[in-house]
Length: 251
Image 1: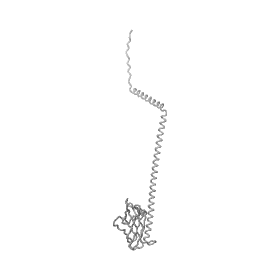
Image 2: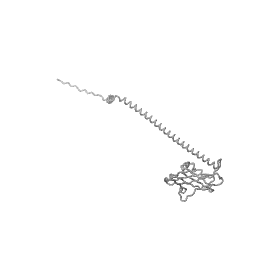
Image 3: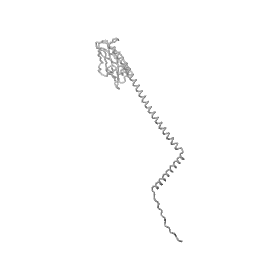
Image 4: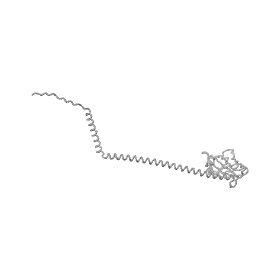
């Protein structure tokens, strides 16, 4: 048996790198699409309402944002209203204070006007030595007080009224009534008497010191001129302190 001998045929194909890359890219894309489809299918099976819930979540987030914005606007409006109310109350308090001060100034001016009318004669009767006003003002946190006594007369226009002033304070200490004279009030072993000399009026200024534990009730002042004219008047302590609270008294 004779064996036939045929030469082997060698097939040579040309390699195309672009085609190879396209094939690889197509395989990769197909694999990715398969993964996306699998994820979507798994999501629908595991949580069929996921898309609806996600939509509701986004809607709730938008509603919360709107609510927060409205709350912030409400807070700003409330803050403006509070500031406006505070400004109004402050303005009203200032107006009330100014009105009270103006009323007190008018009352003081009327009293001064009546006083000066009496001094210049006016239509009223002429008066001799008078105690026009007595005012007290506390000195800091001490037991001391500054005082101002106003004396006046219009009976003797051409002559000076000259003399001395005496002062005593009645009060309570240790449950007992007590009267302090000028020596005790001035706390001096040799106190200088209060002097006056004027034609029409004079303000006598000074200070006094109350002893510890003494509660004052009344101040009695007497003024005696060298020609024998004497006037005496009692002032309630609280009234004298109230008169001293008026700043115009000390100007």
